[in-house]
Amino acid sequence: MQHTYSFIFIIGVLLIHPKFATLHCSHRINEAVQRCVQPIAQYAKVLNQEVSS
Image (cartoon, rainbow, N blue to C red; front, side):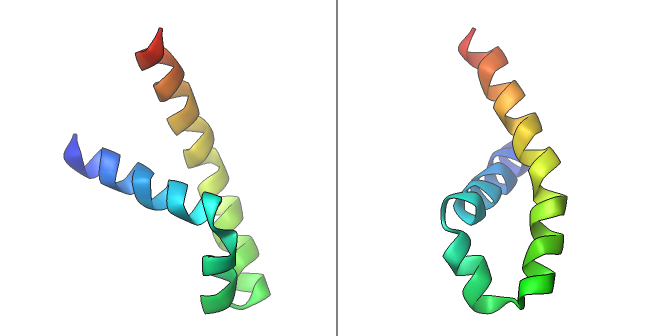
């Protein structure tokens, strides 16, 4: 379970600070990462809502 929270934290940092990803990746790679991360971020939001309920 700890690994899940760590992974979600890393994803959150990338979503909150997109400049970090942009500085270290080309635009094309950044877009691919964002496409990959988006469903995971949405799933994390659903989990967070379920825990809050």
